[in-house]
Structures are given as C-alpha cells and as structure tokens.
Length: 244
Ligand SMILES: [Zn+2]
Image 1 (cartoon, rainbow, N blue to C red):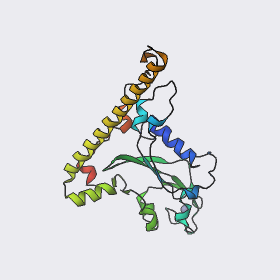
Image 2 (tube, protein in one colour):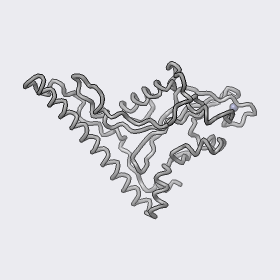
Image 3 (cartoon, protein in one colour):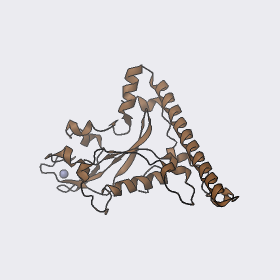
C-alpha cells in the first residue's frame, strides 16, 4: 500500500471498501460476494457522515471512484462461469490465484479521474507473478471480461473509453481534449473544496446554536490546509491522449 500513488485518504477508503467486500488479504469472507452487482465503488459523501465534534478533513471531499479489477476473485465468479483463467506464460494447466492485494492505476475520463484497482496474480503451476491489468494477459482473456474494463490499457499508458468516444464524437484535437479534461478536473477539485467549506460552516453554526459563543478554533485541525495532491496533480497532455 505504501507504493500506491494516491492520497492517504484515498488509500484508506479503498482499503475499507475492499475489506467490506472480503477482497483484502485476511478480511473475513462476505456471504455472497458473487451477488455484487457493480465493480465500481463511489466515494462517500462526507456531508452525510456523523462527524460528532470533529470537523471533517478536506481530504475526505477529494476522493475518487475506483474500479475493481480482480478476475480471479469471488466478486467476478458469475462472469467466469467455468472458465479457467489463463496463465500469462501459457501453462497448459494454469492455476491462477490472487497474490497480495495489487495496486491502483490512475485513469482520466471525461467525468474526472478514477482508479483501476488490479490484483497481483500468481500461477501456482509455474510460480510466476503478474498484474491483472497486464496487456499481454488481457489479450488472453475472453472478450466478456475486457469489455467490462472502463479503459484501454497498454504497457505505459491507459486511456479511458469515455475519452476515446468523446474524441471520435467531437473530432477535437487531442490537445483541445486535454485542456478540456484538465479544466474539468480543476473545476471538480474546487467544487469539492467548496463543499468542504460549507460543511465546516454548518458544523460551526450548529455548534454556535448549541453551545453559545464557542469559537471554531478548538476544532480546526492542523492539517486543514487542503491537500492538493488528493487529485495527484494529474495533468493530461495531448501526448497522453494520443497513446492509442
Ligand atoms: Zn503458469
């Protein structure tokens, strides 16, 4: 988890979600993981959480959705049916299992950024390891698996299918598209920060009503300086968008 390149709050939230689904090493099994109906996880809306006397951290307002890509897990059992997952190295009798938790990879779509959380896989027959988003492995999977992925993945780059669609639809140059996506991400960041300020204001007002003239100072956390890297400073260049 220390090698994941995303904010600390994003890491903690993703871990909690994976634990709830029984997809984190050592987490208790979930009764019917095969009944999960979406591989997407949307961030909580912190306004709805009961913060008690604590003010929310601004970083809670800057979480991004993630997509779970664990074809070996119980959550994808219906999709697998009786399909035996192939080994990256072509073993005739592959035995592909999960090895440690995997890692997230950031993707930029027309609706903002998100992560694809891919398993680390191991073939017990040949004892070799790879990540579930390895393009060479994806090629070996039936189309019904890869159709689910929200992005096209190559070795170095990933491009969201929504961005591809938008490029085709509008005929915009990749440069224009990159500017548009960067603007959108900035706007989303600012909007989320405003939501945070509103939440602070509402806590303060409630507090003033209940306790009289107490100041907010007691509750303001030291780290409440805003964490711009919650969106990882992702900047989309046209090069990125023309990878395909
Ligand atoms: Zn193998």
